[in-house]
Amino acid sequence: MSSGGTLIERFVDQELDDSVRSILKGAFDERMCSEGVLFREFEFNCFDVSMDFEKGIVTLQDVLSAGENNFLDMPIRDFVSACGLNISREGLK
Image 1 (cartoon, rainbow, N blue to C red):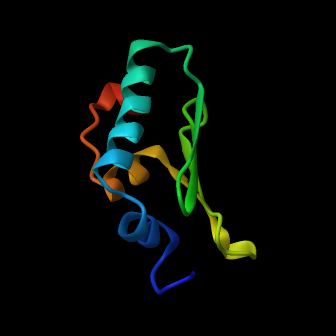
Image 2: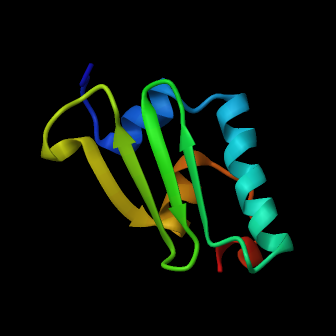
Image 3: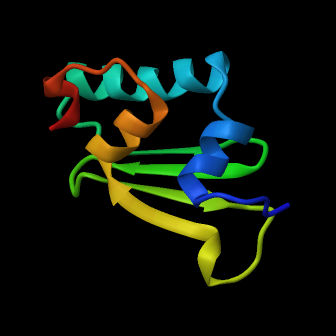
């Protein structure tokens, strides 16, 4: 199920709805409330999302595709921007 576009574009088009957006925002809200939140991982329909707050990296994996192009590591800030999440700067630290 590898239609055109980059992995993040496919995630936004195929997976990112209000429910997924709310779940992701909740993880950032949780991080803002506690520096002890270092890592969050989510399994959605087509994609897995891992947030490593300590390293500032989000790993996005297309679980329906095989091969080396089925995952992407990107800075949290870029992920937040691509997903259109409304996160304060404190939530991105």
